[in-house]
Amino acid sequence: MCGIFAYTGKKNAAEVLLDGLTSLEYRGYDSAGIFIPEAGTVKAVGAVGNLKAKVPQNFKGQSGIAHLRWATHGEPTEINAHPHSDCAGEIWVAHNGIIENYKEIKDKLIKKKHTFVSDTDTEVLAHLIEENLKKENDFEKAVIASLREVRGTYGLAIAYSKEPEKIITGRMGAPVVLGLGENENFIASDPSPILRHTKNVIYLRDGEIAVITPSSHNIYTLDHNRVIGTPETIEWDISQAQKGGYEHFMLKEIMEAPEVLKNTIRGRLIVKDGLAKLGGLESVADKLRDVKRIIIVACGTAYYAGLVGEYMLEEYAGIPVEVEVGSEFRYRKPVIDGDTILLAISQSGETLDTLEAIREGKRKGALALGVVNAIGSTIARETDAGIYNHAGPEIGVASTKAFISQLTALSLITLFLGRQRQMSATMGKRIAEELLLLPEKIEAILGQKEYLQSLAEKYADSRDFLYIGRKYNYPIALEGALKLKEISYIHAEGCGAGEMKHGPLAMIDENFPTMAIALRDSVYEKMLSNMQEIKARKGKIIALATEGSEEVRGVADDVIYVPKTLEMLSPILSAIPLQLFAYYFARQKGLNVDRPRNLAKSVTVE
Image (cartoon, rainbow, N blue to C red; front, top):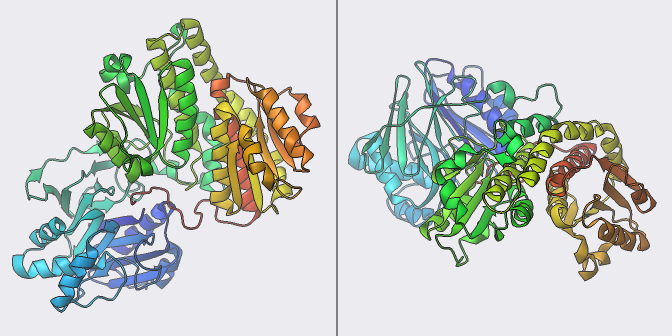
């Protein structure tokens, strides 16, 4: 969840590192710090801008490490900010992850007269390397010996003032990528801070360490065996990770939805035959024919995409589906066999809980598939097969365009598996044709953004919100509520409209508005009845309705219209106005829409 960035080369390291930290802020932060061997250390609480304001003009050098912290152990203070050092102030460590056995290591080191200044788990690693350096008399060997002793997760950048050109990294459960330039090299939590310098990267695997200098990079295992890393080329460029004239990344990413959908389906539809051509699944196509059950694992917004996928796959592919929260999956005893698919959904491809669910499923014989946006990510590498979203980088913490892409990818997988089974060519062709029409329909919804802004302003004083839906749009009610609460910090909850009478209806009064997803589909009349129940309790209603559904106006206080599409694809359209509503609602409150408090983009710790 934290962001690490390191540089060694010929440029002014302070400028490179501070610029890189800015591009990592979307991962979440509460403090930041930088260490340059020739200059020293500067730390600050809050955003990178606070750190920049404290860095003096003469703070220069040609290598260094930097860090954005998202607090786990210890409050967000300058003392707890990374990088952390040993007693002598010579070894400095920036760390993403959690050292689980830090307490026992710390107790052992205190007995050896080490003095600790922070409340963090990370500081023990700097002191442990210091202690092992006394025995090994070699920086690299001391790091390897130390990493063998720690338990937990880590993505690291480690600097030693006596060897200033050399930086060491290691990975265990937290992402690390090497950037390979000309006479300069980089270490980062993800490619975003590297992109303006090079597109050539190597993704480290768990249990690997790497040593970089301006002219070299070497990768080893913790047994000090050499590893030959294969460089990859990043597909996207730096302009995709910039705002492009929009006030916030979140708005830019919502507005990119039509292009994202096109990119997700590009080259993947054979319309005349009603087929999906998914190259990432071809290697396991024969196995997929015999699969008896699918378990979808995901977290947060991706979990809600999985719930929509459950409806799609059961109705059109005829396969029993379960959807599990990744953070709970491995603490159960899931019943899995060789006829089970474990389908993981993750934008970053690094979500630790989802990754561990994959590993648990594979241990029990499941075929692991992935729907992942980040190429080269851990989940993409550890699954047996899968498909990429091709949504491009998503910087806003609240997922928007990735969610649209995930729903689209699940519809493609449904078409692929459905046509392997009982789905007719006619039905397959209808789905394929409608997918091609969706970008234009999304454009029509985006054209209503001023109206959605006015609605958000009208309801911005609300302290509570209820979102309701049925069938395919029940998960969209959950997702709509999540969007509102994660960026505006008000109480919002989603529920199946049929559950209203089993509890949620008690909350309704004139000050508790409801967003009702009432599209003209197989449950339309039931949704109208639920809206009447709310109206009878004097509740305000915003209805999301299909174009032409005039009867909704007789029940709702306000109506948002979306174009008609197939019921299974309707969540792709209904999600868009809820994203825009949440965006404008939070903006009306003057909040940091892209970086909501307490949240991080990529959750790489438990």
